Length: 351
Ligand code: SF4
Image 1 (cartoon, helix red, strand yellow):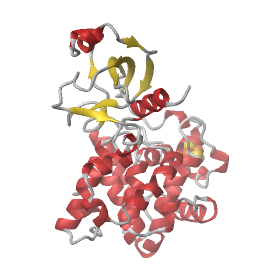
Image 2 (cartoon, rainbow, N blue to C red):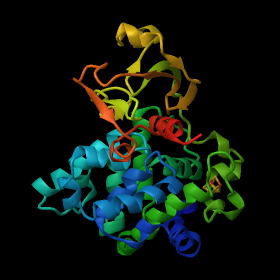
Image 3 (cartoon, rainbow, N blue to C red):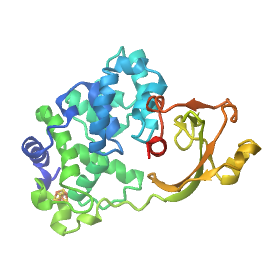
Image 4 (spheres, rainbow, N blue to C red):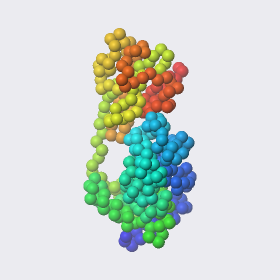
């Protein structure tokens, strides 16, 4: 640590205590189960959405044992709409591993936590710091932005060596050993600063507790950091959805394969072309197909253009290997991708 950043940790801790976020429901707890659950939900999901899902998940699975005993279908159903469903699968597996291999107690160090399914290095550090006061650095997307600006860190984070170097710099900025009781406030403070002050587009440097030691702010180059040359390549795909209904209003849903889009979730049958969709139906059903308005669903790396095709079918029209008929009362209990859930609800709503 150089003289310029000597009191960085102290500034963050003091700011967190007076200006940071304190009312989020998971902040009231040092229970690793609750902290872990919130950290996994907050990956790639906005706080406002997690505020809705988190209490429902806890009401259904009050502790790690309850989650471990649940069926995968129950877990996916409660996760439905949060996206990034591998998180839910890992969450379930992780709970079972905690029960089977750790006697129902989460390990107390970041190094051990990081061996569990779905817990990466930064998440492990957050749990260990919040729950056990371990002196260990976090480096999620928000914190990378704060630290690369603070340090005017010119190295390209697309390179593994640069990322390693930033981890080392993050470690050097931690509160001193004798102040490790400050770790929860420090870790929370970095998260809060990234979320509420050092934002991607318009950082509010005048309100920032580390403005005077921030390299990017002094140079007026906030937008130059973090440096990352490898950009995500976006792609687009069109998919056709068979929205097959019976006279009683129930809908045909199939479970998706364990790989690929919406892996393991229940879904309307998906096809890569309208011809493929029509070919999957008995000849007599094809004439009655109805093309509903297509809509766009945006994923992180991909724009999906979804084309629902309605059909009124008899009970026996579709093969039973992968799917079944489900009525509206059953849909909330299934893990459905968000756009499919919306489509079914809109179609079932009274006109
Ligand atoms: Fe971010 Fe500005 Fe604070 Fe620097 S001074 S850490 S750029 S908010």
